[in-house]
Amino acid sequence: MGLTLRSILEAILFVAERPIPEAELAEVTERPRQEIADELAALAADLEGRQAGFQLQRVGGGWRLFSHPEARPYLEQFAAGPTAARLSQAALETLSVVAYRQPVTRAQVSEIRGVDSERSLQTLERLGLVAEIGIAPGPGSPLLYGTTDLFVEKLGLDALDELPPLADHVPPPQILDALERPFRTSQVAEDES
Image (cartoon, rainbow, N blue to C red; front, side):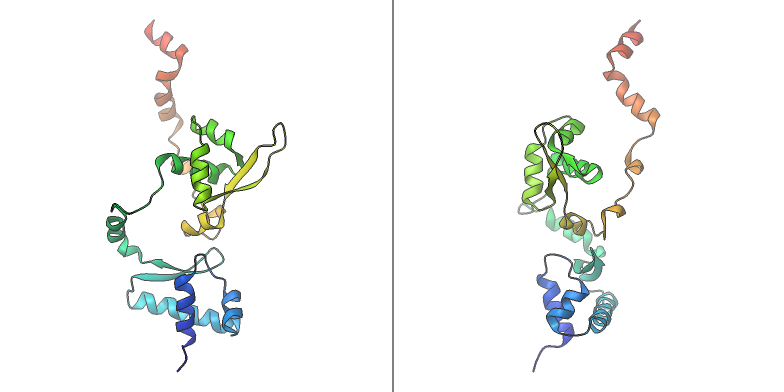
């Protein structure tokens, strides 16, 4: 007895390291694309209906299995264990700069962060979240960095333009002014007189 189309799709999606487009699944299974689309929709509904620990979602131009959002507290507890790997604060800051300013050079990332970011960029490249995407014109021909499809996928987005606006995360000007005031030497001198 052979596997059903649903079983085949489940097996492929289980081992996939990226979203798999319907066209690719149709080619692999030698089935019509519409049949694949219908089966994926039915599988997604079935998983949701039985409150499975994972969901099938359309992201990044394809389909991918994700853990169920309500399992998050348990996954966080699991991820807090000693064997979990996570990004450092420096790597998260570097990734944010690259995501919102790409294409960007290493020097530009370092300037924005105020510290050398070479090691963080190397870590993000090794993890496949950032990649060299070109060479900037000008002296020294510095490398340009940008985010990868894996980055978009890990965020559960279809495209970079779905990133939340940066303005939503920046404090209003009056708060920035209050935070920066102690670091302005001319302002400190005026305040003391």
